Length: 134
Image (cartoon, rainbow, N blue to C red; front, top):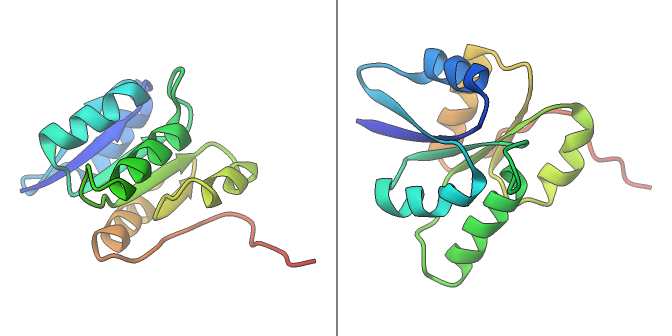
């Protein structure tokens, strides 16, 4: 069984992700705050971590940076991380977060499934404005 850990305080986001990914082969597990993410990763060993950008006092970017810091210190195995963004402008912070992939809301079941499949395969999956060199 594949375990997906979702960090969101939004019931609507949880319902959307669970409807898109939840199945007899995939279980969507939830934490409601960014502060719970590291402990849940250690306890549950998820296949994919999905972080909502806006979650309480420790949002998705901070939770992602925390996981990457723990990986860098060899206290945590590498994680496949997907960040859920609220708008195109959030791509700026997503690029600096260390996330493997990101999607801009509103989510769609096919895009979400494609992004999760990509990060599970060790690939990236990104959306939003392209970086323009000046």
